[in-house]
Every structure is written in C-alpha cells, then in structure tokens.
Image 1 (cartoon, helix red, strand yellow):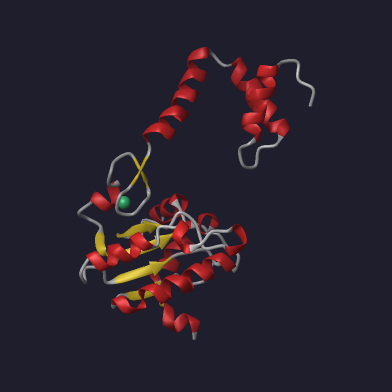
Image 2: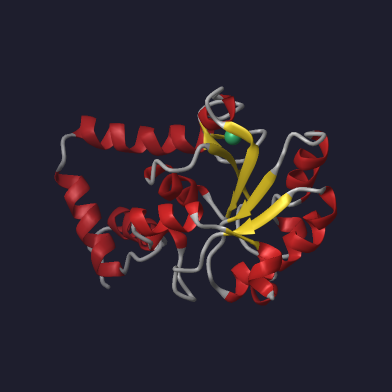
Length: 206
Ligand SMILES: [Zn+2]
C-alpha cells in the first residue's frame, strides 16, 4: 500500500497487527477514527491505556479482574469446593453465560503445546496444585473444561497425573462438543449441559 502520510501508515500498521485484521480493514478503521470527534478518539485511546495499565489478574483464579481478587472468587454464593479449570477468560465468560455453574474457576492462561513451545511451567498449573493443597480438603471436585483439541487433551492428561493423588474428584465436560471444538463457540445450552453431565476422567479415558 502506498500511503500519502507516514502517520497514516503507522496507524494502519498498528491496527494491522491485531488478530484477524488485514491491511484493508486496518485502513478502513483508521479512516473511520480520523473522521470521529477528537473527544471520541481520546476516549478510545484512554480505554486502551487504562486497560493495559490498570487491569489485574485475580490472585486466586488468575481471571482478568479489576481487583486483587475477582468478583467470582470473592462471592459467598460460589461453591469453593468446585473448581472449573479453563484455558482463558473467554471460557469463564462462556460458562458464566450458561447460568448453570456455581463453583469457582482456575484460568490456566493457555494449553500445553510442545509445537508452540508452551510447557506446563508457562501456565498457571503450579498455582492450581498449591490452591488444592492449601485448601486442605475443601476442594471436592476439579472440572477440566478444556477444548477438545490435541492441546486440550494433552493438558487434561497432564493435569490428571498431577492431581490424581490429592483425593479430589477429577471430571471432564461431556464431549457433546465436537473434537476440535473451542469452548467459546459452543452455544450456551450445549455448554451448560456439558458441565451438568460431566463425567469422571478415569471413566472417560477407559
Ligand atoms: Zn478469581
């Protein structure tokens, strides 16, 4: 693309770095912003600045939060004996939308993927083990609600091996979700049912 302005080119290059945004879309977005009142653009950039500078991760479950401990972990209405392990915050949002889950979460921050150089130590796995250990029997069940992909299965198996001696029930969500399925794209009814009809992991690998 031949730009008439270096500033325009730089802005388009920044937008073009976003996932799923090509050069043409980036240019369309930048030209759109350029037409907006200055106050609107300032609000837009301020929201991004604040997001990056002020966002926190819950000290307990590692979900994105405005506070040191997220609202779910802080709530007295949630069952602390039930931990649902998910890949990222999108999965928490998807499961919360089902209105069928009343336990708490643990956000791994990714899945084990040797191909991408992501190992167990890159994820919030040690903190999950510590959390269960420190709970001194409070945690009754851990639901491994991970994607039905190679990486999801690898991570589930790894977690199972790490957690099986803690005396907690380990379950996986029912795989009505197609292999290769990502949790966030599953409709709420299916996802809600998958959690309600979860199965012990031992049985699911037999
Ligand atoms: Zn939390």
